[in-house]
Image: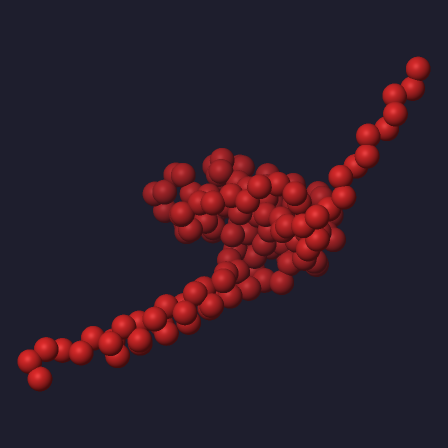
Length: 138
């Protein structure tokens, strides 16, 4: 044969594409956190953010590595390097104390991070009931 048959190559590439599409969402942060739900719009950002998670016991994680709160700022500065506009996503379990989340956000702020976002998940029931307006009293 004088020409190369590319059909098997295309078949293999399509299978690999499907495998990567299925496994890519599973490769996000692996710390189990029960996120609160929200009706806000989803953010779309092409850059890879740093993820700080706080589990149900109050333990702080950078990506999947446990970190003490006092070491959080220096660890993130070391990871960030020269990138001043690094996005940080804070994932806090909905059962933890609000003060713990604020302590983590305070540590991030004191380390010089200004682009900090809180992560929540969409409700399971997308058709959440809207509150009915109350009649005005005279």
